[in-house]
Image (cartoon, rainbow, N blue to C red; front, side, top):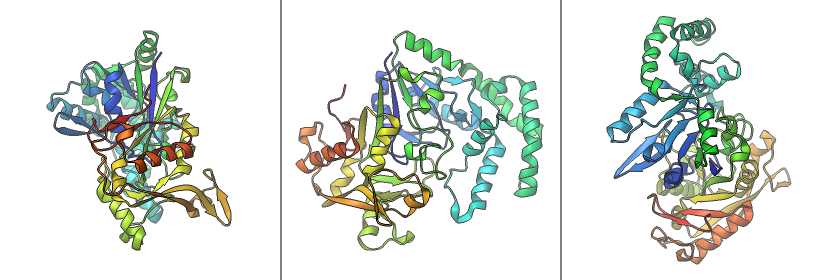
Length: 437
């Protein structure tokens, strides 16, 4: 039963889309198991770059069946738009399967998401305001509306009526926002039933049958370990289980089926939104000065660090091996794919965070106290770089400059897992496979 889980190991944006796109053709199924259209990754089709938000990367390959699992929250309008864009590019979505049990993002979820962020002011979490959190809240409260409910107008109307009896007073009395009628929502959402019905499936049964038949399955995570609702930098996290354990809950496939867990690590670190970030190199507009500001600006500019979904400028910093080691443990990583190594070719000296310090205490592990992590100071090692040496054409580990090889070997030692893929440029082919099995 060969199956692989692929997850981010930092705060997202590590390049999961490229790695998934790179290996997806080897799998019979590619499955999204959590998150919603707050995620985004870029895949390449011919000369065209496409930003996918809900659609699994397997849609790009005719031999592969893309699956949206029960752990995903689906904005039907966003999904339909994505299907149209793909079909316009000549990419068939006929093979898509959507779990009947996936929950639906409703209009009031998006309104409440944006209003709550505004209310938080300077303490904003940094959500995409696309209704993800409020949708998961309703799911956990057993008040959610699922994809299967769209297929029965009577049930859908009853559930919308029940939801609005609770949501409208909040929208009106607390936030002073537009309220909804049942007919208003039904007129917008029920037409999606006709469009999405051909894609609906009992995906848990589908995937377990596939495993019994010896099919290869890739479980594709969104966001990343440090944004996991349980294991991330709470409350500055997403609302789903985006570490490897979420693949089981989000699909109905038992964890014993997973024989490889690939963690995507950027060769430095980035973050979008609020929350602690010990190795952050502050931009000038955020108070950074001198070397710190210059480093942050260079990482952002050279790495093109702007969000796929939001377009926001990402916070940038040096590689954090404390977080790397934590991600190896939490996910049970068997492999690491290291991305954007070429960005570090712009630096004469590279820093790696190997521990934190706070009030005289050294932490070689991730401290669970929020107050400690917020104020922790990184303990850096300085490593010689390979400044000015172009590594974008390297296709074997031995072709890399000696300093780049040393950097990779040192990261392996610090985090405790093998780096078996190394990305040296944006193109899919610009990847080194090293001891890959």
